[in-house]
Length: 376
Image (cartoon, rainbow, N blue to C red; front, side):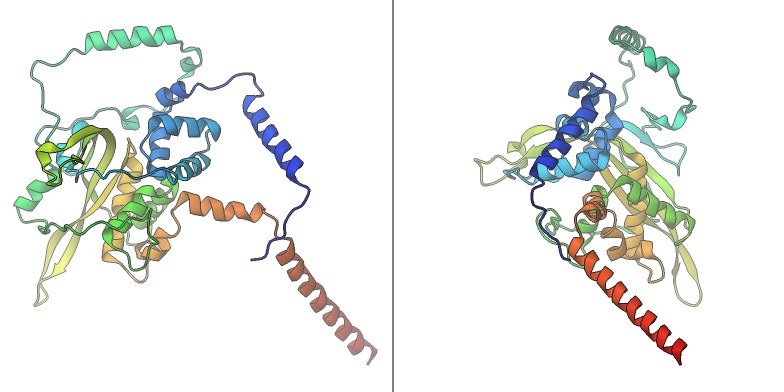
C-alpha cells in the first residue's frame, strides 16, 4: 500500500491535539481518576481484560484520556504494557483457590455451597434511576454505613474459598471425560506471532484479550445460526485469585517459599455441551463436552461467549465460520480491528490517484470506441 508524506502539517496536527483537549475540557470540569475507578467498575474490567494488563489505576487513567472510548483506552494500555519489563512469572494458579463473590449454576438448582448471587444486573428492573443525578458523597457515606450495619458478618459463615467446582461432580459420575494434566509451557501470544493451527493455550489467550462486543457477537452467532446449540452454564464464578511468585533467591522453587504478591478478580465459566457419541452398531451415547472462559474482572457475558467459542474451535466444522480459528482469532482483536479500519482515514493519495487514472483511461477508451461505431 502506498502512502505519501504530508509536509507542512506539523502546526495543523498540534492544533488538532489542542482541539482534542478542548473538547474534553470545554464544560469546565474534569473527571477525577479515583472517581472513574470507583464508579466505572464494569468499563475498567472490560478495558483491563482486552489490554491484558491488570491495573485498575492505569485503566482509569486510560479511560479518562480516551474520554470513555474503550477501544482507545485499550490501545493506550496495550502500548504502555509493551514497554514494561517482565521480571517474574507467577506460580500456576488453581481456580479452586478462588475466594468467591458470586457463583451460580444454570444446570443445577442445588450445588454444594449454594448459589451465591452476589452483585449482578441480572436481577434489576433495568429502569433508569433519575435520582442518581442528585447523588452526593455524603449520601453515599450514609448508605454505606447503614449497609454495613445491616449486614454484619454471619455467625454461620460459609467458606467462600476452595469451593468444589460443579464440573467435578459430573466427572465423578463419568459424564465428562477425565483429561490428563498438560504441563506444556503455554504459548505466549504477546511475545510470539500466532501460527495456524494454534494451540489451545494460544486460543484462550486471544479470546480473553478479544474485543468484548466481537466475542459476544460471534458467541451469539453460534447459538442462533452456526451450530444452533443450546449449551448450559455448568458454573459461573467471580472472585479473587491469589498470586504468588517463586523466591528468586532459592533455586529449588519450593511452593512454601513462594511470595504472595496480591490478588486479581476474574470471571470463570465452564459451559456444558451435550454431544451424541457413536458407540458402534448404530448406537449413540450422550456425553458432555466443556467450553471454558475466563477474563479479568466481572465480565460475565464475554466469559460465557468465550466458552462457546472455545468449544467451537476445539471441535471445528468446515461449514461454520465460528468454528474456523483463523476467522475467529484474526477478527476479534480490538486494537487490530479498530487500527485497520481507522487507517482508512490516513492519506492514500498515491493509491487512489492511481485508481482514478485507470478509471479515466478506461472511460476515454470506451467513449472513443462508442464514437467510432456511431460514425460507421
